[in-house]
Image (tube, one colour):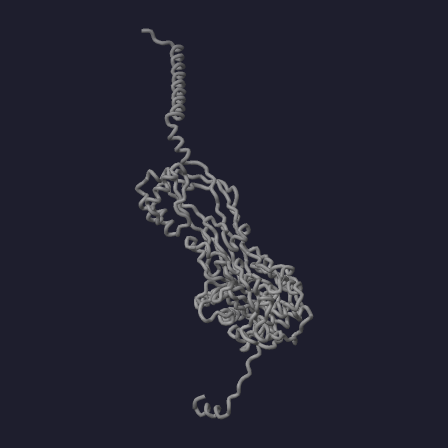
Length: 577
């Protein structure tokens, strides 16, 4: 047997190494084929299980506060529950428990997942309470996840509902100031790149793409304390008089800021599902009414401004009615001859009509229009209306007469409050704002300050015992105001037994700071007059607001009555006093 030579052995080892490399290369090629074709599904699953994703960073909406920084609307972080039907549907054993936790009908849940079986994202329930989110997390159902969002919350509920409005489930403004200032309040979501596992759990943050930018806060002119008081008093009055609705507006006569605005009936913005479509409108800016006798101070102001009348002028209102063409203007009583103050104090329709017809129509229109009637207040509030004041060129005699006592014109409660702000602010009409003002507005001069002061003194008599609204008095303060009791317009004319009751006034009358307008719509019962229905609401709201703002009283204290000597002796002796 021949022994291999050294050369043969080296060649043999050379072939052996080549063969080893060849088998290794074939093994690698086989592995490539295996991974690309036979294990393709496995590899795709692993890729899906460990990959980068871009996720949204939610930005919270700006907070709405009152003028003192008290929160009226805030966005709170909450969790929403979503699912990947492709993962959850095969795990049917979890559906019953999941439906119970989310308070969903099991059949509804199955139909929802079935209709969206081809999707990877389906909301199961938005904005769940923390306890519910914890239960979902503990259940650990395949394909069920939590997503952080923000939910709008209103601490004062229906007290501010019509003013603030509300947002939808995506935190976008739908009504009120939430809608008017949606762009200001809305934030811009951010984004980041993260590494997620197969259960869509974030393993690690990889990169911040764009930081979240929260919305800007909004500071209102509203005083939360006055808002609550106005809400409480209005709700009580509407219930007491079985009225269909009502509104109260409180204005700062110096700045034009709205300190309070409430309506009844109201709604709870924290419970979107229970909100009725007709209940969300802010009646104080969207609903119009004829102002009735609350227009008479402007008629008297026009008379004084014209120079044809002075504070000593008188008008004969006997015999209590006045024929204008084929129509008759009537007073409640025959008041005889009245001066201008008496026309306001007794609320004489005849006296106001005679004065109006004695003036040039354009003179009268300029005062009414200058007071803001027939034009938008311009606050930007959604749904705000302008009301109606016809051009003086189209007035008939009867229209000129009835405008003098508030028929044939339509206004909103906010317009009425702003107009009385003209009488409170020395004849200057100020812009109205729902936002806190850092500087005093200049306004627009409409009436001579001397005329305004004369009319205010006349209006003070309205709350005297001889006036139509003694119940509107505010202890310790002088009040200037006017009542209105207006027949409601119907399809066939004016209803004989349905009214709007109004009172609008200001205090302290010596140097007015606040204007309050009260409208009670359709009070039922024997008491339907403005002085008896709206007057007490004005008194309580104004009294509380003056106290909260720490405004000093301006009324002279009632003179102290001296106790007769016999009673003094009786009291000293311990007898009845």
